Length: 255
Image 1 (cartoon, rainbow, N blue to C red):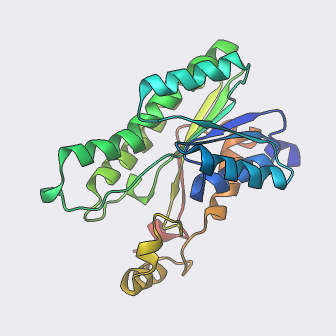
Image 2 (cartoon, rainbow, N blue to C red):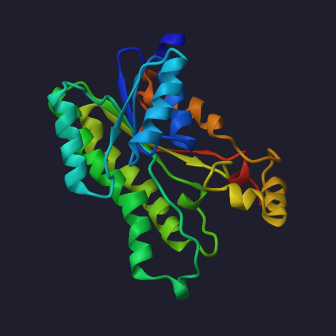
């Protein structure tokens, strides 16, 4: 049974993984046997994260590039090709939030969120899938959605639109790439305690709402995503495609 979740010999690229959810998922993949490539825009932060994983005896490296730039992504994959680094597992995790009422929202800020959370997954997936198809040995793509892949909340319209798009982009990836042995699925995290959500957790009213609204009665932790990402990246999910798994403490299951 353990072999179903064994990622030994696989290389996983996790975008937005110098900290937070991305780093926790990368660690989970590495602990399952994969060599992980951490991604971010700041090399110093990446070096620190890589050092943490290597100190734990895990195989890790890094790549710094801009996931909102097609040219930057193409250059990164060209560098992987040059180094004969084959990406078997791609986790599209890079994202950002922008909280503002729609009546006050500038197009520039809307576009920034869409580009970072949705368009980047398309651009990254395209480059990874081209190579997986050419190699003929399949692959795994895991897109990171959100509760807002399914439901909306006031003041986060661009994020909601992007994460809703992630759900159907994942379906589209499955529809086109499943014949090539590629499984594309998504994870929809609930309210996770990270650097990005810390201001919300520090607000007693919002913190109380999250704890009361979730049957689990708590915020999620980045480590709560590790098992799901390993499952979706492993042979255990070989007939799972185009799905989104919500890791939300039961929040979407109840009124």
